[in-house]
Length: 244
Image (cartoon, rainbow, N blue to C red):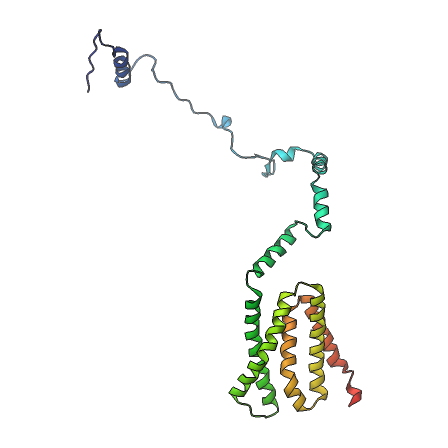
């Protein structure tokens, strides 16, 4: 144990006394120098977080405000008028419109020309498939290179159509034109199969089917259903059967 000597003429006497008190052993009798720690009882412990109702749900400070007082504060803040004004101008900020804007922003990350190029590759393959199927239906021999040549000739026209429709697809006029073109191409394809010779079917059917499939795929659900119903009714009624 370290012994500390004390001198009366030493200026560090108060410091030495403090060190002795700290290093001295605790006495067995008498009041201890260190304060006694008391732990609070369970009833005095306050839980962190919101208060709980009788059903166990959290109750916050805003729940103490009556509903009519909440509505008064909302009206005085003017937030409802601002929301109605933004809604009338088409700039409402509800959850659904925010999701739509976010979806549109994600779509616009891909350039239009690249999106059109991807569609063109797929549609050109569809065109070549129907070109081979139509010739096979009428027992016409067609080579692989000939099909590739026809696909290469149709690719620029397909790319132009896809580029324009992808770029302006959000416009209502373009959506209406796509619906009309989809109905026209589908009905004309049905008319070719019912009343045209095989040469007309072989020349026009692949392009019409490719255009009909693309427009039906690009449109929303309701215009696509309308197009399918119109083409189905045209096939069932066959308004040109009297001209045969």
